[in-house]
Amino acid sequence: ADYGLSEYDATILTASPATAAYFEATAKACGQGKLAANWIMGELAKRLNTAEIDIAACPVAPAQLGEMIALIAKGEISNNAGKQVLDALWGGEADVQSIVAAKGLKQMNDNSALEGIIDAVIAANAKMVEEFKSGKDKALNAMVGQAMKASKGQGNPAVFTQMLRDKLA
Picture 1 (spheres, one colour):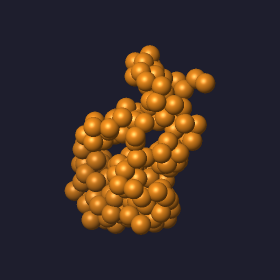
Picture 2 (spheres, helix red, strand yellow):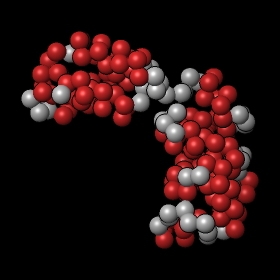
Picture 3 (cartoon, rainbow, N blue to C red):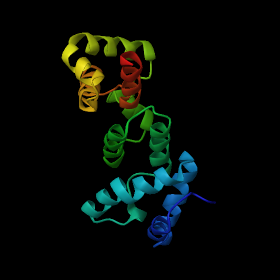
Picture 4 (cartoon, rainbow, N blue to C red):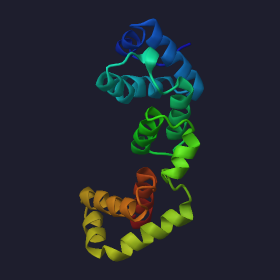
């Protein structure tokens, strides 16, 4: 199968049969070869190194990692939330959906709820709105930050950014 990996990624992931098998199973579970590679070589490798264990002894099953990556790919959880899910899986919790629900990690994708937050941020920040309209993109980032805070981190920053751009255009 072609996972769209760079030569470097492919070399790292096939360095051991156990790593190759773990990657293949994870990629199959999520249908996201590049994302699977990034998570295995990044966050997962970091935890394996810290715990000084081989991937063959990894407490997180490829199917679990794959399920979590699929949620990120669909925009249901953020990368940051993914790290929290991985921590919980690493600690022995088994059900990705239960972890997401219990920790309140699901990104808000309900546009009417997000729009309410954006309207409130715009109303509360006349100065930033002016700065943004005069070409200061930093002001937009600051407003996205406030929207993220108002949504307790559950809003999708890309959606907030687009909504602000649309409303302030």
